[in-house]
Length: 485
Image: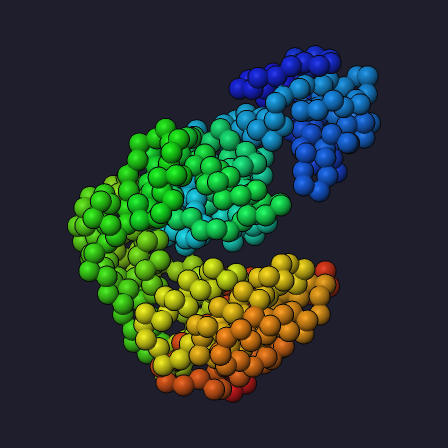
C-alpha cells in the first residue's frame, strides 16, 4: 500500500523523504513496530510516541506521522500533520478499506443509558433479520465473537479493524457507544454515522485526565451531531440545546415532554414478588403500548431511544414490543431470582450519581426496605467513597459495606472511607469485608417486600487485588450462597 493512499483525506507536509513509498502496516504502538511500517506518533497521557522516533526507525519503520519535530533516522520519511490522533483515525479507515461505508452506524452518546440502549437496539434489529455488530463498555460483538472492552470507545485503529471484521462476518449495521473521551480524542473522527443519539448529560468525567470543565464536556458530546445524518435527542434533558448548538444533522426528539416527536405517556410501575418493571404508551410519531422487565423512568427513556432508532429501520411494532419485553443487559439492573418474597438485582452503579439514580428509581416501587451492598475500587478517588457512603446512608434502609476491587489498597481502609460518608447520615449499616459473606448476610436476613441491590461490579467477572485479577462473578457468588443455604 502506498503511503499516499493512507494520507488521501488528510492535509499534510512532507518534512523529509518521499510520501510515495510503499508501506506494509499502520502502527501506533512502538512495541508493535515491524519492518516497512508507517508509525503514527501519538502524544498520550502517559507517554509520547514522538520520543520513540529513533527507536521505531531502528526497528524498520519506513515513515513517521508527527505533529512535532522529531529526531528521525536518515532513510525514514517524516510527514507532519496538525493532529496525529485525527490522522490515525482517517488513516485507519483507509488502511482497512473504508469498512464504515459498507455499514449503517448508530452512535449513542450521553452520561447514562448508552450501554442498555445499544443492547436494546441490537436486540430489536436482529429480531427482523439485520446482522448487527456492537461496540461498547462491556464488549465488542462481531458475529458470534465477543471481545472484552478496555474503553467504552476503543482507539480509532481498533474501531476500523472491528468494522472490517463485521463486514466480513456479514453485518449490515453497527450500534456503538460513543464516549466524550472518544470524541475529544478523535477516535470516531471521519466515521459517517447514519444516526447519532443523545441520551442525557450529568456532571461526570470532569478532571485532569478527562474534561477540563463542563463546557468542554458538552462541546465534545456535540461533535457527534456534526458527523451524522440524523440526530435523535432527549428533549427533556436540560443540556439538550447546548449539545446540539452546532449540529449539522436533521434532528428528531424523544422524551416525556409534550414537545417531543416521540413521547412516553401513561407511565405505570409494575411490581410483583421478585419482579419490577414498567409499562407506558408511545405517542407522537408512533402509537402503541410497551412493557419492559426493567424498572424505572430511565428504562422508559432507554427503550424510547431504541424505538426512535428502529422506526428508521421500519421495524414492525410487534417486533419492537416483543424484543423490548426480553431485552436484558448483563449487570444493568439485572434481576437474579433468589426468593419468592424479595427481589435481588445486580447493577454496575459505581459512583454516587449512578447509585443515587438507581435508589431513587427503586423508591418509586415502595419496597419494604432497600438493602444496598457495595464497596469502592482502590487507587481511585477517595471522594467517591465518601459520596457513595452518604448516598447509600441517605437512601437505603440498610447498607452492607463490602469489598470491590481493592487493587493496591487494603480493603478495610476503603471500607473505613465509605463509613466516613455513611456517618453523615442516620443510615443503618454493617461492614462485611468478604463479598460472598456480605451477600450471604443479605439473603439470610431478607424480608418480604425487600429489594436488595448488589452494586458496583455489574458485568465484571473478576476482583483485582495487588495487580492480579482473580475470578469473581457476583452471579456465581449468589449461586454458591444459595447452594450452601
